[in-house]
Length: 304
Image 1 (cartoon, rainbow, N blue to C red):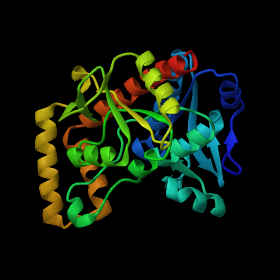
Image 2: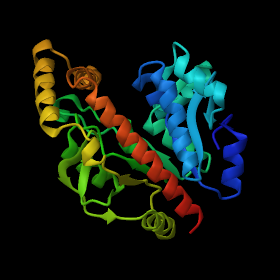
Image 3: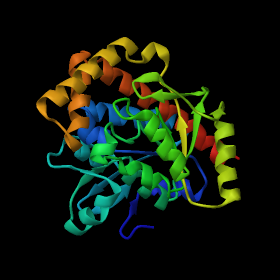
């Protein structure tokens, strides 16, 4: 375990007793949603996990101590406190040494969850290879971390503003297993279908658990399993609206000279603003579905 890793009593007991646990990131709470909706969503997602018979393990760093499983007051602190940093796995040692507080991204959440013995993690969309990678060399740290961390991540694909085919190619190169859940198409976060296929399809939580077991049996690199769970068509962002807004936002980036790390937050902000919040609704629909599925997969995993 990470030095000074604080695992809540509930999570620790569930892991020890082989009861289902689902890890949840905290960036969506601190940086992804406006107040007070962020706290409402955080509580809702934990409740969804419990409805599936699993224990929620929301992860964050508080005063330099990584926490796996937050109590009511800690969850409120992440949602309400100003100055909560955004921490990838590269930032963890810096935050610990500085006594800082921060919300964990996919990479930091996956690392801390795995170190605490939690095998299943639910999130919205992964980071990936950014557009114009040949110029910027901009690639999310999520990919490299998942290539060396044995955890099952339930996600709605990668954010649709990224270079999806390049991300899939990068995941293949890194040896990260990818399977569609009930689909042979790779989802596009806000969209049910990114326009790209996946090679493998899993249809039940039991099938996912069987792959997890086979990962351990086969051995090799400690890489992740990505379960790409599409947002329902009825809850996705209208594909035509998505395509139009994204194209206009990319054009605005070029006109304003926006580049590098500033591109992603600009595009996401434009999607929220210019779809009248429809992209945020699709995002939350995807997260809810992923959390529910993760609870079922966690149950199948411990019951195998």
